Image (cartoon, rainbow, N blue to C red; front, top):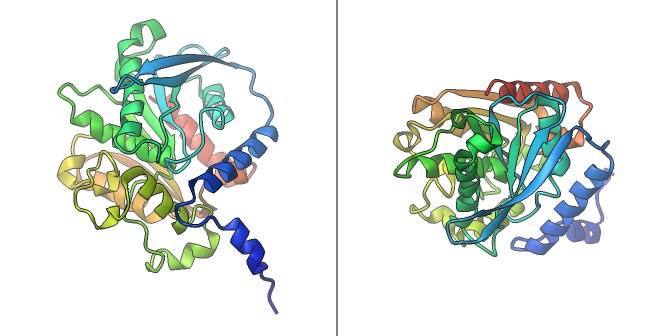
Length: 314
């Protein structure tokens, strides 16, 4: 008889749809364990600042700069992952320092407000306030406002894509050099566990369909997948070709065993049809968050080197 997990244990490990707090606790513990296992990064300075969002809320942000690289003139606005419902700047501190340490490119990371305490468009507007800050303070920060990229992983990748759409709709859009979307969470309609794309990879998923349903309902409200009124500023996969025209060029990578594989593939195709340059990488055998799970894998090293190169080219 094959091994199988005791049903009681399996039930304890599987957070039910709608259980936000269990998912927050699990992700916080996982990221804390990963941070504890990493060597400290000592060549990056960090400064906390507060930025006023559209509704007057003071958003915490962190400005990361290298102490060993000359200032390149470019900069990145980073949004952390966590399914729009979890994690924080503290959880991502080492991850962001790693990018700055290897490239010298300074990063502003934003502690956007989480769902369900707020709903879209508030997190998008929080991140957009970070973009405005970089542009308003470009001279003081020593950066070229035409060389600012938006970047994020998972929900942070979705937010970076959403902010690109949101910025395009403003009366005076701000220059965005590139969208760097790491296994981005883009599609609020990706909630059907019986879909043909989902079934083959279901046993390998680290972010599961139940997690996805919980997260999107927290951000947008229940039964969003049946609504035609969700704009690409909330869920970028809702974009039409026309709405994607004029967006910044993009870099996207995603593992083939990731729940977000199909939406990332389709979004890259959408950008191409809209005339937006997009570099896309599908990584065989890799799940969501692979670089933290297997940091010493040769493929992980190759992917990280590729991301570093994209940052250095800004």
